[in-house]
Image (tube, rainbow, N blue to C red; front, side):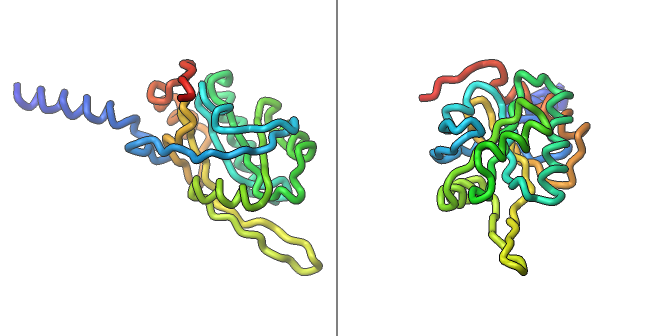
Length: 197
């Protein structure tokens, strides 16, 4: 009897702590994201308030990225199709504001999923936002005057209050990530718009 009660109690505690993820790390407490103001692919302002109301997958990258960014965005498009698309948003934050203007971002993201959102800001604002998320970003000069951007290849899961709830790191697997998102859905406030206060 005591063993059964102990098992029940432990299961209740684990349920309160969040889902067990196969491909990521669920944070014991959601991490609030600091205030930011990006310019989205339509030239409008994008703030944390715009991300409230439904879960969002966030990925930092840039359109000239030769491999990691397109591979990750293709995977996120596949994942979004496997979960309820209307309840799972994807936000791509460009770390290369010099080249990634709103029209460039718009055309790039449309190739993966027309519903993807994108945004960027001046380099100092992106550096602050990347630091807030824990993403390493650095500009690397190349011969001939060109450059590339080094950045962490991490996918963040925001809950419906625009707080970081889970972190996913490579290697990514579409099936495992989709399964984790379905497991996490009851803990994210999906489909329940939350107050922005």
